[in-house]
Amino acid sequence: MTPRLELRRASKSFGRVRALGDASLKLFPGEVHALLGENGAGKSTLVKLLAGVYQPDAGELLVEGVARRFASPAEARDAGIAVIYQEPTLFADLSIAENICMGRQPRDRFGRIRYDAMHREVDALLSSLGVNLRAQRLVRGLSIADQQVVEIAKALSLDANVLIMDEPTAALSLPEVERLFAIVRALKERDVAILFITHRLDEVFALTQRMTIMRDGMKVDDALTQDMTIDAIVSKMVGRDLDTFYPKADVTPGDVRLSVRNLTREGVFKNVSFDVRAGEIVALAGLVGAGRSEVARAIFGIDPVDGGDVKIAGKTLALGRPAAAVRAGLALVPEDRRAQGLALELSIARNASLTVLGRLMRHGFITAKSESALASDWGARLRLKAGDLDAPVGTLSGGNQQKVVLGKWLATNPKVLIIDEPTRGIDVGAKAEVYRTLAELVKEGMAVLMISSELPEVLGMADRVLVMHEGRISADIARAEANEERVMSAALGATPNALGRAA
Image (cartoon, rainbow, N blue to C red; front, side, top):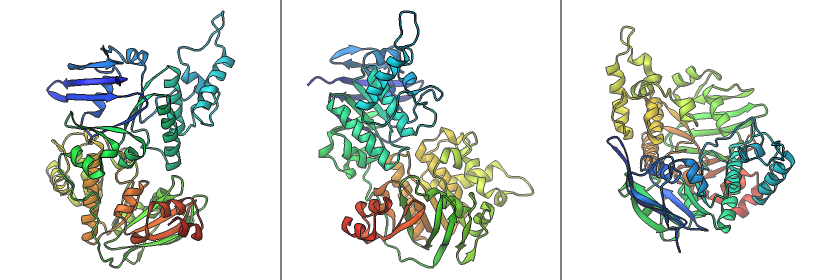
């Protein structure tokens, strides 16, 4: 079978930096193809070659077996290639129909837009995707998942037969991911060739038929998904064997480090109670909107509460005061590292030291040398990949940014670490480093409360799983008894009997 789209031995350099070298890819009709690799492996550059944003320095691009060279994204779009980016790029104050038909609205003989015809056409397109959206609805207020559906509908309206999806599930809840997968499978049945880029390996096995693995700007393997294992994929991506992806060792829990009793914020969560002991990783699982992050923010003092109390190592914490939480030995690595965890324009060294500036101060001054020394120490422990600690932290990859946030809080020597979505948006190699760090921390006696939407991560790293449903703890599941069915049943509010049947 002739590939719908093929890239042969392509290379691309930016000055002295070689982003791609000998990169190849084949996309076939009616197939979902995974593109895998660590951050910096060249995936984004490859996608931009396919989309006409960049032109290759060497190699060739073929569409239906015919050599092409796209001078612009418009030429790639006219050839049937569409890209759905992680963050949709729609006009918020226009309707769904106006976004989909932008620049090519149906018009009458006087040049006026035929809104009725446009709405009928777009409603039919949305209906064919099996989604409950109306053409006349404004984009403003739509969820990220619904905006992605609009982007897909727009691509189909342009007769796209190659769809490139770049990290489309990064910001989606589990039900939204399932809906997206259903749409992708329907497109596959229509003979659309789909390139699916993700860091979530469970999605690769659930959705794709073939994969291409990249490392250091080059293709290292093409394979059928059914012939691969997670260990084999990870080994090829990072260029080395990872002894175990989830290195959680059995640790005997010690004394209670974090005690939460009847914590309540009206309308958000109610009567939340649990303990986390020294040497223990407790995962807080549940669907998006269940109240997990809100509980973490309330414990740390960012959000107000209406009742309940929190103790750190037996001492009652003054709620609503983050500074008091830090002094008591509590640290919080937030869900959104870029917006809440880092000052992107500041240096790596300055970001790493923000939580301990008082400790570094001498005679009213903080020296660059002391900041760099602290950043260097934690960077070495966390295996931070950064050439210059004075460079803006925003220039780092997502995984290395997460390591800076983690190091910033570990520098406070906390008794309890709360870490929200520890590996969201980072590659497999960086995930393994974060898991290794968490495993080392609990061996040293730290208590860890981990909030995660990735079930394999929850099951692989947690000693206990607390499941939240609609603002309440619906289940407390020991590691030996935890499985995906039981966690998801509790997340959906199943009864204890139903939990037993699911398990």
